[in-house]
Every structure is written in structure tokens, then in C-alpha cells.
Length: 200
Image 1 (spheres, rainbow, N blue to C red):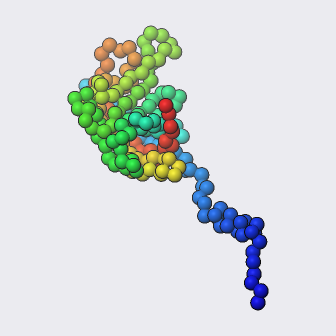
Image 2: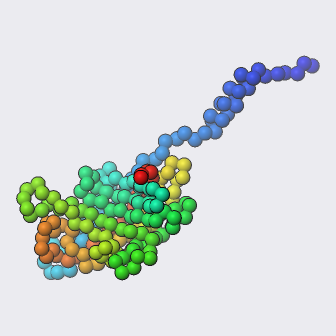
Image 3: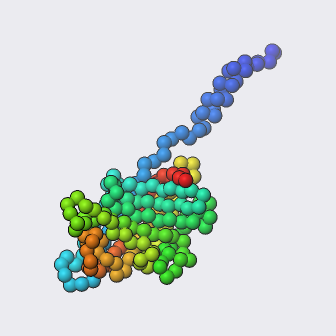
């Protein structure tokens, strides 16, 4: 019996088809986020509490990294409100997964630098805006930030957070208010499939 031989072009095509079938070219899943902002005032004036919940597509979520830092953002565009969580890259495990605590103005040893910024109108005139900012340089946030998953192939990070800022200034006060009301500010949320972008 004469042995059968396959022409090389056919063999190459067959291998190519097999390889192509085994590749996963599925698109990356879309990013999603949700968060609840709770403001509980410490005085007896009205209102005593203001709660709001935001979800995608009202919210954007993404991450940025360079050689030194990884920062995760959950924000309400255009530039109205933003929460960020920043890590020293070298202190994170390769898979990023873990629960991390916040740095404070008294203690810089923990893992995460937290910042929250909300846009408010200004008393100096119509159409004039400023930002109320909450970070460890002013406050001592408590709570935790958890990375639950990292998809290395698509470079997507997912997780959840709970931040409490006690005795904070009113985030809804006009930017130039001399003595704003005091409150306990709480931010809780989740983010999924936040794309990690490289930056300088």
C-alpha cells in the first residue's frame, strides 16, 4: 500500500484552523460601577440626612498605573464627583487581590490613599464652581477597599469599598462657605471590569 502524504499547504492550513479555534478573542466585558453616598448631619437642623445612589452609565470606573502607583477611579462625569483609591504598586501582590485599609493624617502606614472630590457652586457668582475635597491630609477615613478579582488577560480589576469620614464638612455647602455644617460622610460601592490603563 502506498503511504498517504499530505501536501504542506494543507497541513499548514489545518494547524492554523486548529490554533485559531483554540484562541479566545472574546471582547472584554464592559465596566460597571455603583455607589451610595450618605451624609448624616451632626446638628439638629434640617435636613438631618441626605442619601444618594448612583449606577452605570451615570458612573465611570477605570484604573491607571505607572511604575510606582495604581489608582482606581469611580466618578460621575463630567467632572462633578470622583472617588479615587491609590496604591504603591510595589506593595501589591501580582494578582492584586486583597483587602486594604486607608491611610489617615495620623497614620500613613496602611496601603491606600483615599480621596473624594465633589463639585459645588461658589458664592462669588453664577456659573462659578469649586470643589470640596476629602482626603487623608485633612481627615482620618476608616473602612476598607477590597480588590476581588483581576483579569490579567484583559487588564480588568473588580472590587468593592466602604469609606467613612467622621466629622466632615458638608459636601453640599457652597465652596466658599466660611463655617459649613458638620456631618459623618459614608461612601459605599462596587466596581467591576475597570480597565487598567498605563500612564506616565
